[in-house]
Every structure is written in structure tokens, then in C-alpha cells.
Image (tube, rainbow, N blue to C red):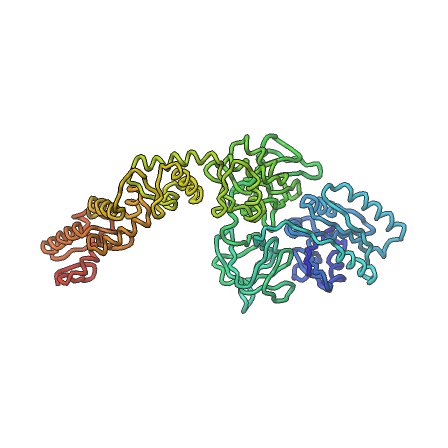
Length: 610
């Protein structure tokens, strides 16, 4: 079954709620305040279904003070059912709603000409002609049908239903990443926390771990309902209620739920911006941003102009926003919609202006190949594709496919990294310099990746292979070393150097990984050598990453016994007075080793002779 989200919009009192009830049997004005005021004050939801198609209606308000709720509902629409009173025609809120739908590029518009039983056929025909002409004034909207209806005429309602069911399937670009803005959050007795919203992309299953991006909290999905029916999986374009397990933060409207690790937050994003109704947008002004169900202040920074009707801009926020490529937004000023557009660069790159403008143009025109080339140029030490879902709205496989069309770049498919081919020369010189400085260096590609953090293991491996092909290095059991150094027993050499480094460290020995780095040896080889030194009783492991030679250990133990003989006991304070260079970590480790002596016993925090 295919799923469509259809939003209803239109001027107050033009009959949206009554029409939805006639279509679905659902009365949207269910809240007490809605009943009292007689208008829909928040998003209401119902559905219409036949054997092939399920249509979820988002009935949004028409009152001018509640325009923000209309915007919240419009994100994710596949189509919109716009109601226009056959007698009154297009009114101010009708126009404002259509302006918003136009900015959001909602694919299809169906006009329901309500209360058509109250006008003559001649008046009806004239009104249809006026609306057809009016629809042509919108650049991004397509009026698919104008259907005269009356809630008292079942035939007209059936005609509208068939028109809705005939809507084409909207093919939305998907990267499979689950995204869901919360529009309502509440607690039900015996159930727990429930949120409602629209699945904008991907899918969610019972038992999934999902992430509240703004609060960096993972939650488990306990149950899912679609139109009050329990389901195991919810898909894109479905209205969904999620029962979430024990959230530690308050969930509220505007929060974004997604998968952990895929969407990062930023204080600024680059956008394509278009004004409406003759408005101009001024540089360095603060407007209200509506995106998803979120509403925040945004400072608008134009790239070149001091004011404009359309073009590139940067939006700046006081808190991080977690936005994605091509996400639609609306801007308002003093309650009036003035502009809208699309997020085109959701990730804040440190980039020079001469590269930023062509990048924005490439992203705006969906020229991802050009965007990749510019980003690789800007990130010479590696441009990551791990964020391709957020940055370009495409999955990793598609990102790699595009990267393979580009010349003069190195692609690390496993690490999802792109490098300019020229960086290999710099890396080669950097690696070879290690062996020139320390001819006894013995490193693996993995160890080098830990030392040269910007270079991936795959890139390093290719450079190492080139050095081996040129006989500058020798690959020996997974370790790269100088081919001109004759070492009969590599392990013995490493053990001797490890012992020497620990011995010189005295009772404050360096951590093993610091020794490995200083010696330029592979960490796995270093760990093996350290284990053998421990087995041979030359080195004692006191705790994680604290190894001391037995000679140094015996020396400090002897001194501690002398202190006990003089003071009657030893504790951390007395120990510290004799060894001010020791941190608490070392003091505790040595005192705990002292406990292993049969002649010593622990009394509270003191050590005394048994």
C-alpha cells in the first residue's frame, strides 16, 4: 500500500474541518479549547483509505495568529487540499497558505470549492476560472484539480475522494536515514511517553534505538501506532505515534529524532532564500525560522547584498540546529511570512569565500560531483563522506559512486574518505622522515595512522607499498622497517629498548603508548614485548598502563618500610611528603602493592607492620 501525506489549508471558516469529517468521519476539533473557540488551533490528524492508498490528512489551522502551526504541518506534505469558499473565493489566509506551500514546493494542490450548493452554476464556473488563473501566479505549485463540493452532497464528496486517491505517488529522494520531528509529546497512564509526528525519511521499528539529537539521548521504541493501529514498522510519509522508553529529558514539540552518529548540530547553515509577496530580506536582521516543527530565532547574513529577493545566505542561531540538505524552511517577521527556501549546506565548513560561492551553486543545482571536487580541494588532508546523508541527502554507496567519477583523487572506500592525489607526496615524505630520524623504527600502517591522525590506514598502506617498491622500506611480518638495518632478533631489540625506557622512568615510568610513540614501534609489537618482560619478572604491572621495573619497585618498597619504621605507619599524605613528584594514581598503586607483603597490614587508610 502506498502512503501519502495530504495537508488541508485555507481561510478560517471556509470549512476545512467539516470537509475532513465528511471525508473521513473524523472531527478535528477535539480539544476542549478547540470546541470552545470553534477553530482548529493545533494539528489534527485523520486518514482516508482504499485498497491501494492510505491518505493521512494533516488538518492545519486557518486563523492568522496560528499560522505557525500551518507551517509545522506543511513540512512533509505530498500534496495539499486547499479549501476555498465558493462564495467568498480567495481570502488573505488562502493566499498566505498557498505562498507557504509554494515556498515549500508541495508537489500537488487540489482545490476543494466548498459550500458550492450555496452559489449558482454560473457563479461556480466563474469562480473556477478565477482560481485557475490565480494558480498560474505561483512558480512552484501545480493545481491538479478544482473540485466543487458540499458536505451535504455525497456525490461531490465521493468525487473529491476519487480525486485524492488518483494523486500520483510522490517519489521523494531518500537516503534511508530515519528522521522525525516531534509535533506533540504527552504521557499516558500505563503507557508512558508518547510522541507524534511524520516519518520524513527512512523507517523505524519496534525495539530500535533512536536518538534525540538536541539532547544527545538514545531512546528505545517500545511501540508504534499508525492511525491507532499497532504496527512493527513505520515508513516514510506515515503519520506515526511512538511510545518511547523512559526518556531522561522532557520531550517536546520541535525535537528531531534520528539515528545516533549521522546528524551533527551547527550554529550556522548556508541556504537558498526566496522572499514572497514583494518582501525584501535585509542583511544582518533577525527573523523567526520555522523548520520541521521547530521555531527559533535566526540572524540572516547575506553573502554579497545588503538586501535581496532571492539568493544565498547564511542563517545563524544561538543554539545548534540539526538540519539536513534540501530541508525546506520558512522565515517570518512580526508574524508575517516574508521568505523561505532550502538548506543547501547544513555542515559548517571552514572554507575560503572563493570556494564557498561555487560550492553553494553546485549544491543548489544538485551537482554533487562539482561539490565533491571543491570540498576535497578545501579539505586537502581528507574529506569525509561519513556525513553524506546529512550533507548531500545521499547514502554512502551513492557518494562513493559519485567520487569514482572524479579524477586525481584517492578514495578510501572503507574509511569513507577522499584525498587529493597530491597529498600522497607529503605523506610519503612524512613517513620516510620517521625512518631517517630513527633507523630502528618498526611500524605498521595502523601504528602510523595513530601517529599521523589525518591520514587513513588505507592511504598510509598505499604510500608504504610505494616506499617498499622503491626499496626504501622493507615489509617484515606486517611491520615496515629500514631494509639497511640488520636485526637478527627484532623482538629482543624491542624488549631491551622497552626495559631501558621503563628503567630510566624510575618510579614514575611513562605509559606504554608513550614509549611506543617515542621508539616508533608498532603497538602490537610493544604490547607483546611488555608481556614477555612481565612474564620474565623484569617488569611489574601495577594497574592499567602502569608498568614499573622490579628494580625500581623494590627500591620504593624498601623506602616505604623505612618510613613505617620511623613514623609507625604510612598513608597517602606521608607518602606524598616524601615523593612530591608522584600523582595520586601512583601513590595508591604503590601502597596497594605494599599490601601484598606478609609483614604489612592495612588499618583504615594506614599501612602498619603486622
